[in-house]
Figure (cartoon, helix red, strand yellow):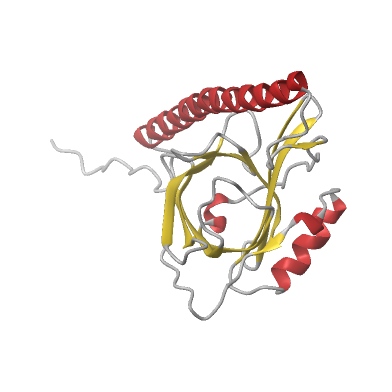
Length: 238
């Protein structure tokens, strides 16, 4: 005799073993990825520190004042970390409006970056472009991502032709401005770069005003910044 009783279906919101397994697997993969990137970042940072130390040592040993322009006496500002940094909200196009000049940037005008968030990377694929002093459109492509050792707002610049500089978001509202700091110090010398980013290509806008205040609060001299021109002939193709 067949029973008319039907087995009760599990509630739709009950956890599924397969789902839990996939989530655990994803978390494990993310931790492995962050650990791998942390090891890579330590290697890049070590090479950078050795380079800076070598240059400083050479300068001191030779007793010459010819210190490269990107080196200066002093230590990096201790800027802290931006809390609960949301990588997804940070994605999209940003325009450099003010910057402490960077020797590895081949462009000086119309500088813009597109941050494409990558879930597997847990970071950004970044395309940065602008016009050189001769008016040539130039572009660099690389990655910027957090590592295991630091909070998400303290990231690593990973471009093929660039040393592994840190990239720290001091403050941002995601929609208007972002104030970023990149600095390495060693033996009383430092290489210090900083950026004002805006969601719109304008100089002297709200992003500049906000970041000027933020940098001053952290002891970063805003008189070292130069404006990045954004004029009618700019074409944004990053």
